[in-house]
Amino acid sequence: MKKRPSLLPFFIALAVLSLASNMAHPVTPTYIAERGLSSPMFGYAFSGAMLTMFLTAPLYGKLCNYIPTRTVLFFSVLGYAVGQFFFFLAQSDAAMFLARVFAGLFAAGMWTGALNYTVNTSDPEDRRKNLTIYTTVQTVVSALGYFLGGMLGEIKTEVSLIAQVATIVVSAFLFRFLCADDTPFKHRPEEPLRIKDVNPFGAFVDVKRYVTAMLVLLFIITALTNIGQATFEQEFNYYIKDHFGLTSGYNGAFKAVIALVCFVVNLTVSMRLMKKTNINYTALPVILCCVVPLGLILLFDNVIPFAVMDVTFYGFNAIRTPILQNQITENTSAQYSNNAMGFYQSMMYLGNFVGGMCAGALYTANKRLPFVLAFAAFCIAAVFTVLSVRTYKKEHPESGMFLKPHQPRRQK
Image (cartoon, rainbow, N blue to C red):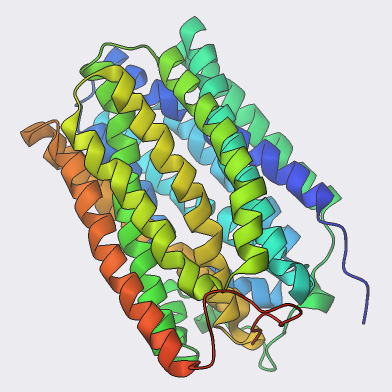
């Protein structure tokens, strides 16, 4: 078999994209206020993008079976840059919403492609490690993007947006020329790609080919945790400006601290859990650790403990993400790996869509309600995680929490 390529060039391109894609977030509340747009548009515009990402992610997962993933990445990242330029030009609620919807059509492809490239080019024994590195790069550099965007926003909001578009374009060409063709390392369907296959709703129908009871639970957990995460993140960004009167620079500073915490926990705690434990059991205590800071933040209305709980939540959430990604890859056959990761991305975006829509509406009613929803979503996700542990135990009665020395990880 052909030797798998190094993932270092890909991670460099991923870092540039992750940096760029988050540079607009800390200045978006200010951008909305400066143009006299309605405050709920902060959540609605986000949800517009999530809706199109939800609908198209399974299609991109399917396309990754037929087309070199670097090609999917190149064109989808360029399309996302165009969408963000439209966002920069927006001067009305409708224009901003449509710009985000357009960007979402391509953003689903770049993140689905990035995740599939990681899986396709990883040796089975290195997949857990590489997915953890993938999440670490994405999480840490995304937070740095918040920081950089916030600092540039102190100059002028437009500076952050123009810098974002330019950096996204750079990342597109990095993916195209630094990444290898992953075709030799993935299963290619025997039937050719047909016009009717290029149908986002048809991609959802394909799920029945590979879905199991365990995967159903994992997809539900994905949607619920992303409802909680999106609601929390969207409203935290707006709350610290609206309630505490902090500028985009403070928002960026919080994200920089989160970047450092996530970097440390992923290279220490996450790597050890991946190496030493059966993640199908480890997922439960990790998600319970996410629930705690979301509950405690409801008790505070002071900026310092508020920020501490924010950082604590993202530290545990940084561990949760690669565990869930690995659970899905290890409980899916190689033949449908790209499809499953596309559907995983779709469930993420479904959660983000619901979270963004609820965040905007709830914030208008009461500023604290979005945080209540975030806490409730993770509590329900914890219940489904208990069910997933029981399902896995039933399917694998010989398994335990810890891997025995030299015990191979389960691969499908």
